[in-house]
Image (cartoon, rainbow, N blue to C red; front, side):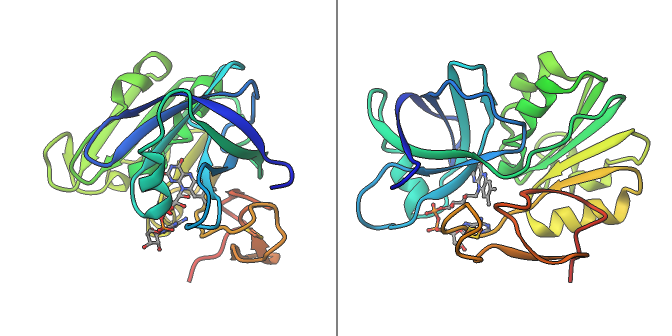
Length: 237
Ligand SMILES: Cc1cc2nc3c(=O)[nH]c(=O)nc-3n(C[C@H](O)[C@H](O)[C@H](O)COP(=O)(O)OP(=O)(O)OC[C@H]3O[C@@H](n4cnc5c(N)ncnc54)[C@H](O)[C@@H]3O)c2cc1C
Ligand code: FES
């Protein structure tokens, strides 16, 4: 595992039925939107998994993750004092622009937005979309002006999709979520917009070409050329 570092897990807390927050002892200060390949297991699943930096203060780094398959199920079993292997920081993060910003996240896509909110200087409004269970609102409060929330079942905030709440009157909009959501945000926002894209990743460093996405400049690797792209560059089917 060349380039991987062994780091200690400090905590691994369950937030909702499937969301967890893991803190590790890692002194890096990456750019908001950058990610790490994480591996804390031997054998199946063989590949490491990519996770965005949720927060970092130069001593402790947090990863917000959703239990979705084999790797993330294994992550839920990690205890304080256990060790994982990390490769990073990887990829290109969000550029930090002046002036009012909107941060838009869907589900676990809110993960990189907390660290971004802490780094931006202008007034920041966040737009957070959830299926049913709402999480992480308190964490955003100290760093943002307004929090707009939607749930698909209407159990909290606006009933529907968070993109329905979004207005195009910010200097810059930053978004992270699934491809359908990124496409919907791009259709709605015509001012400067940065999208963090997702893909299955095997290497995380541009070597396997497994994470390519169509852009104005041809196919690009989400891991190396992204995961954050200027929306003008990204093409959707
Ligand atoms: C740059 C980047 C940053 C990410 N940041 C985070 C984060 O901060 N927190 C977080 O919880 N997740 C994040 N993800 C997604 C995360 O990497 C996957 O959820 C994880 O790899 C799943 O591993 P698994 O072994 O549990 O699931 P698997 O057993 O590999 O898959 C379970 C199911 O999830 C689907 N799936 C797996 N990975 C993806 C993906 N990348 N996109 C869409 N569907 C997928 C599979 O198709 C399958 O249906 C990020 C992905 C990328 C590319
Ligand atoms: S994950 Fe291998 S090239 Fe992107």
